[in-house]
Amino acid sequence: MYITTTIPYVNARPHLGHALELVQADVLARHHRRRGEPVRFQTGTDDNSLKNVLAAEAAGVEVRELVDRNAAAFEGLRGALDLSFDSFIRTSTHPGHRAGVERIWRATAHDLYTRHYEGLYCVGCEQFYPEGPCPDGHEAPLQQVSETNWFFRLSRYQDELLDLIRSGRLRVEPAARRNEVLAFVAAGLDDISVSRSAARARGWGIPVPGDPAQVVYVWWDALANYVTALDDAGYERWWVREPRKVHLVGKGVIRFHAVYWPAMLLSAGLPLPTAIFVHDYLTAGGRKISKSSGNAADPAALVHAYGVDAVRWWLLREVPRVGDADFTDARLVARADEDLANGLGNLVSRVAVMVCRFLDGHVPPAGEPLAEVSREVHEALEDVDFRRAARAVWQLVEGANAYVERTRPWQQDTAGREKSLGTLVGACRELAVQLEPFLPGAAARVAAAVGGDRLSRPEPLFPRLSRP
Image (cartoon, rainbow, N blue to C red; front, side, top):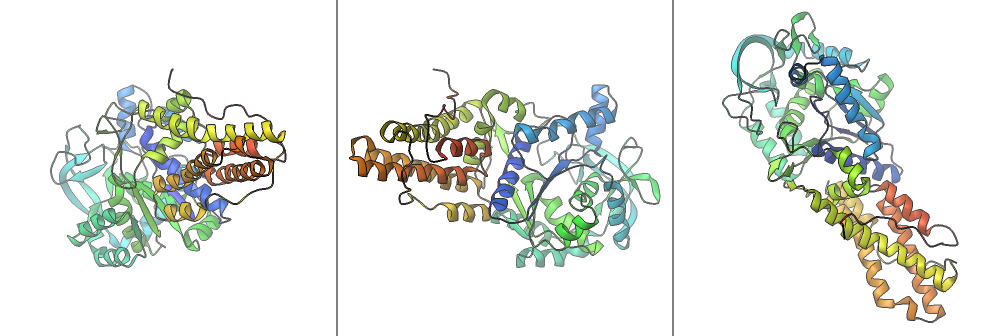
C-alpha cells in the first residue's frame, strides 16, 4: 500500500490539524505492515506557495530562510508524534521534483492553452473564486487579479471522472464526500488556471516550461509530489504496479485531489490513485484550527506538555469519521486519564501485581482469549474509521477489567487463580499487539510489563495528567 498525506504550506509552524492527518496515515501504515503487507508512507511540505512568500515578507526574512525553518518543524513531527513515514519530500529541494513537474506539464501540453483571466483570488486557498467571501473561512479579502495564465482543459474529463468515481475505481470515502464530488463534477467542469505570473509570485516557484514569465500553479506543482518523490524504480513499484494507492486529505482540498489530480493524470496518460480518504476539521471554540485563525494548537508543544500517547490517543479516540471535532486541552487530559491511566495502565498494573503476589511472578499458561478484536480493527480501518478501530481495541481493556471484577482472582483457589491470571496476562499481551499501530510507545511498554515467563511489579505506565 502506498499511503500519502497532503503536503501543507510552510508559511507557519504545524498545527494540530496537520497532526491528525499524519497520525491517521501512520496508523494505516503500521497496521498494514503488521499484517505483512509492503507499505510506503510518504509525507512532506509544499514549499512553492505565494503564502510562503507573503509570510516571509511579513516577517522580514528571506523566503528560503522561512521555508527551511518551518519545513524543519514539520519534518520534526516524526519524533514528536512517533511517526513511521518512509519518505519526506520538500518541493523546493527534492532533486527530482522540478523535473517531474515539468514532465507532467509537457505530457499534458495537448490540454494546455493561454488566455486572459480576471477574477477574485484567495491567497489562503491559492485559487480563484467567482465571488467572495472565501468559502473556506479565510478572513483576508479576496484579491482582484487580472492576468494572462495557462489553462488546463478540465472540462474535457468530466465524463471520465464521473465514471471513475461512480464505478469505485477511484474510491472516495466517506460517502458524503463522494457524493459532494459527484455533484460538483456533474454540474459541469470549467477549465482551470494552472499558472501564475512570475511577477505576482515574486519569482518563487517552478517556471512554466518554455514560458519563464509564468510559474506553475502551486497546486499543480504540489499534487505532482505523489509521483515526483519516487525515483524510477520507486515509480514503477509504487505508482504503476501497486494496487492500493491511498491519499489522506482534509475536506477543504477534496476538489484538488478527487477532480483536478485525476484529470491531470488522465491527460498525461499516467496511472491513477485508487482511494481518497477524507477527514473533516479540528476546531477550537467552534472555529477551524488553522495557522491564520489564531487558535492553532502546536502538536509538538502538546506532546511536550502531555506526552505523545495522550495526543495520539485523543486524535484517534475522539475524532469522528464524519463531522468536525472540537479540541481543548481539558478534553485531551480527561480522555488520557480515563482511558490510559485509569483503564489500560491500571489493568496492566493489577495483573502484574497479582501475578507477583500470588504466583511469585511466574506466568501461568494462557487461558481462553477474552475477545477477538483484530478483525474488527481491520474492518474499521478498511472503512477509514479510526475512532471505531480505537474503540474496538478498547473492548479488550473493558473486557479484561470486567473479567477481573467478575472472577476476583484474589478470592480463588490456586487452580482458579492460575486460570484467571493466565487469561488476563494473555489479554494484556494481545492488547500490546492490537495497540501498536495506535500507540506504538505505549504498546511496547505494555509488552515489556507482561512479557517473558516471570513478571515483576511494573512502574506506572501512564501518569495522571489532571492535577489532584
